[in-house]
Image (cartoon, rainbow, N blue to C red; front, side, top):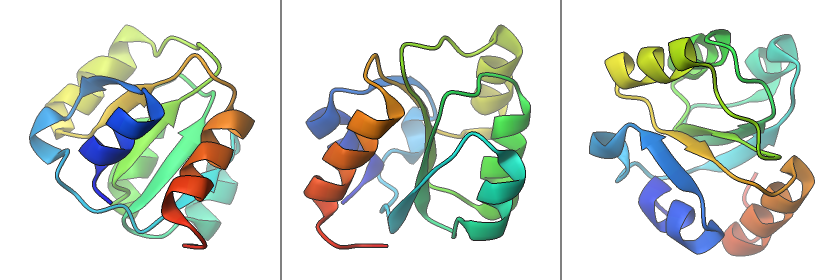
Length: 113
C-alpha cells in the first residue's frame, strides 16, 4: 500500500512530500521516543508520533522511512514543515490519537510488521 493510498484511507492530511506519496509502506512504528524509533523502525515504515519538532524529519531521513504522521491533532512546528518540504519527506497529520491511527493502519495492512 502506498503513502497516498494510506493517507486517503485513514483521512490523513498531507502537508509535504507530495512527490513521494507513491512510495510503498512496508510496516509501521508508533513511538514518541526518537531513540526507540531509530532502534526499531525499518526503511519504508510509516512512523506515527505526537512529536512536532524538526528532529523527527531527521529520523525519517536517517532511516529512509516512507512517511511520518503527527497524530492527536498536534501541529508540526514551521521549522519541521520547512525541513520536510526541503527533503521531500511526506509529513502527514491526523486529529486522531496515535493509538487510533496505528490500529486503523494495522487493520488496513493486515499483519505486516
